[in-house]
Length: 163
Image (cartoon, rainbow, N blue to C red; front, side, top):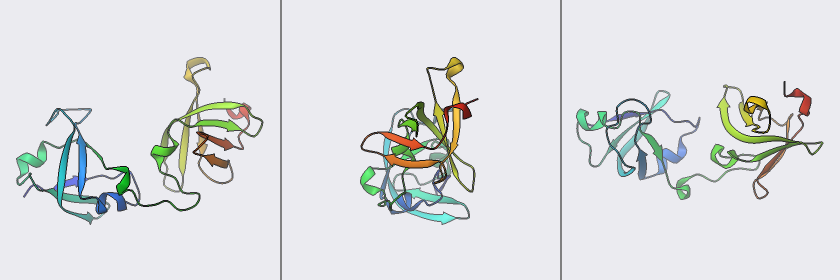
């Protein structure tokens, strides 16, 4: 019937469940079932174990669903649930400068890793040999302040931890 399995990046897929339309980007690896970004309208979406399953209005069989394999899903920002204090969307942290308490710039947030109990910031510093990466747990012991308006994160992380 065209059901597709979705592996959400978020531990709480509220935004995917509430959105009535998704934008799909073609697979970046393997066979591409379609070439350009496309809008799909959701017929039904529900939680299934630790994933989601969904049906779209215009996809009614297995062949159509297989064309979407490996695609990425994007939703409008207006569909995101509001964040609480000290809660951030990963997309908002990407590209922020990371500065320690001594005022030294450690680099910029290049990626985030979910390790289960906590999220880890992957900081890339292109001014160091081999574009050194630093991993900093995104927990209050190390994160002093996130300033989205100033596009920076203040951390309690000495420069010499970058070995």
